[in-house]
Each structure stands twice: as structure tokens, then as C-alpha cells.
Image (tube, rainbow, N blue to C red; front, top):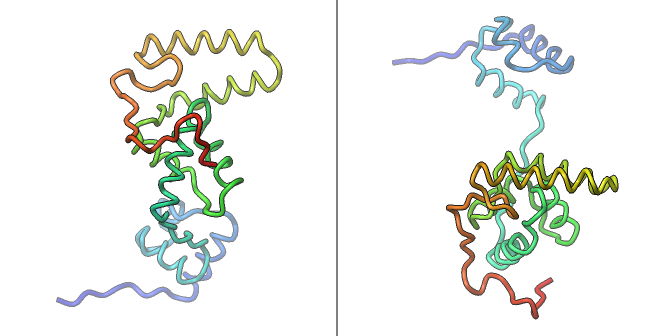
Length: 179
């Protein structure tokens, strides 16, 4: 059984490059039936023509960095959004991290707050930064009421059925400081 693939003509390649340079996306080409190719074929051609940014290689942490990262997250996860945790880690360490990695490790450590709580936390912090303390206090009380109704822990925003499962030896005692 022979399989063949439709060849790209010069006009089609030029059409693709012009469309991408003008801010168009791949889905528009498919929905308008401008090109007779599949979405995968269009994306592969964009890569071959260097019209897309390549995704950087995933950096795997060594064991000692993983342990430090976990300790950092356990110490700083309360009242911080994943974006803030990324900024805090990247400021002080050579090994950079991403929000996806932070969320993944928070999930592994079973201390990831629900996505619905993140905008609430951001709004509370913004009110506090603007020194609108009374509004911030009222907002926090409302947030606590909502958490209580949904069945979340008042202070952390975690589900009540989940417990923080941190291995012994992972967290330094209060006397020790690992950073």
C-alpha cells in the first residue's frame, strides 16, 4: 500500500507565510478552506519554514534541587499564587522554573489550591496593596463564607478531605533555615 502526501506549491507556502506574518492562525486556514491540508500538516510546515517559535527543552531538576524546590513550596505556598511562587523561586535560584512545574509539584505535595481560589486571592492582595483595609477585610470574610459553604478549609482553600502529606524530613524545623 503506497501512501502519498500532497506537495506544497510555492504559492501555498507564500500564502501560509503571509497569513502568519499578518497575524493569522492555523485554525482560520482550516475553517476557511484556504489550504487543502490538515492542521498537523500546516503546523509541521510552519516549523519547517521557521515561522513558529520552538518550545524550549524541558529542564529536569536534579534530586538535590527537587528537594530544595519542594521545601521552598511547602514553606511558601500559603497566600501565594503560582505566579508569585515562580517569581520568588526565579529571583533566588539559578535553576529557573515555570508555572506549570510549580502547579505540578504543588499537586504532588497535595497542597495545590483550586483554580477558583486564585483570582480571589489576587483580588484580596490587590485590595490590601491599595491600602483599602476595610474592603480587604470584608472581602476576606466573604471568601471565608464561600469556602465554608463549598467545604474548603478556611485558611488554605484546600478541600477538607485532603490532608497535607509532606514526608518526614522534607520540611526543616523552625530553628533550621535551609535558604
